[in-house]
Image (cartoon, rainbow, N blue to C red; front, side, top):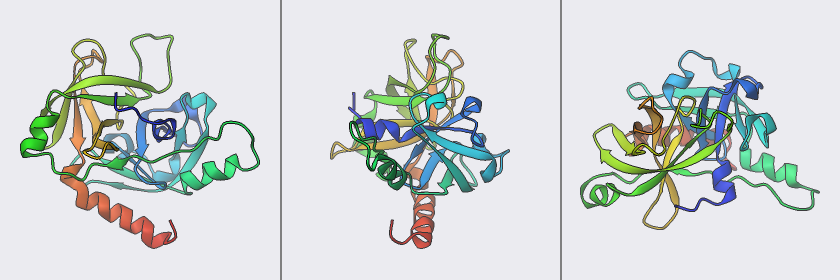
Length: 231
């Protein structure tokens, strides 16, 4: 396992209709304290202010829920960024103030910026990586956020392809969820965002590569920095 800390695990959240966690329809991940990355097919038919982003293992027991002030959908590939009304890290730190016991913090997970090519690409093929989301699980009694370990089987021009080999994988509701691995420094990075896959929920899944759109991601990061220069 890539051993995500509890704060990093918390960075993976759900997208629902406005302030109604029971209507969760997709998964997204904080790449900074104000930006969530997800799939464009999750957001295309919706206005930003009709959605919320929530944190916590179970949507019905949210640690925090955030309003979304705008969205940016990539013109060509199935990726979107959602911009939160407040800083998620600050909001959780504020909620902890004056509370004794276990403090809940969230640690965003960076989008991979390193081009997946050459020897680096070869090293990744066959590696066990983690996928996660709030979609259906093979056990209908279970719900909430699940992490699954799958094998990275292929990298093409647009997608990172993972294979659950009949054991595990992404499922309905996991769209927009991340595939995560450790970079050369041992820090977790998001290689791609769930686009779609095998409807058995344990076969091949296709996740849009983030390294191929890093200029677009950077523009989103810059726009937030300009609006909130302290962050």
